[in-house]
Each structure stands twice: as C-alpha cells, then as structure tokens.
Length: 93
Image: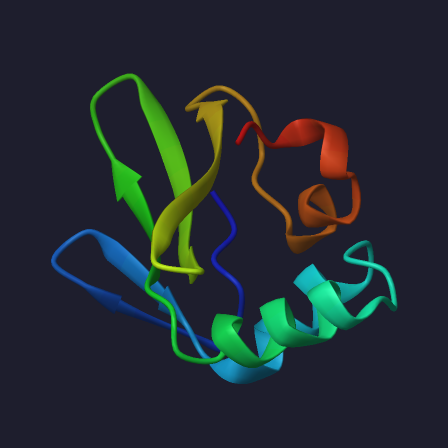
C-alpha cells in the first residue's frame, strides 16, 4: 500500500492534511453547495481504517446538521493511490 506523502499515520489510521482535500475537490464542482462543502471538508475527519482484509477510506462531513459519509473500500491485494479519489463513482453516500 502506498500512503500519500502528506498524511499522518496514527494507530493504523491515516489522517489527511488540508492539502490532500484539494484533490478531493477536483470533482466536487463549482456551485455554492460545493464551495461550502470545500470549506467544511477542511474541518472534517478523514481517515483510512485498515483491517485484515480491506482498507476503508472515510470522509465525514456535516451539511445542514446532517452527517454525510463518503467511503471506498480497497482489497489489500490492490494498490492504493490518491488518484483513486479522482473518480466520484468510487464513493457511496
């Protein structure tokens, strides 16, 4: 597994810094909603949970009081790359 250089590994959890969120915004669009989401993403909790079988990437955010989670699971047999975040179809809401 390749860990992004701008991340911090703490007890098997990878916390991305704000620089990495800019890559996440590439497919968020340019509407007012997406701009607000970008502001909130800077305050949200993002991590990777590593188990014996898979890696789960979680991005939590709040919108009008509701919590929304985006996540993607990878098999340990697959390489992980920040480029995986370029495709919004990889995420579920």
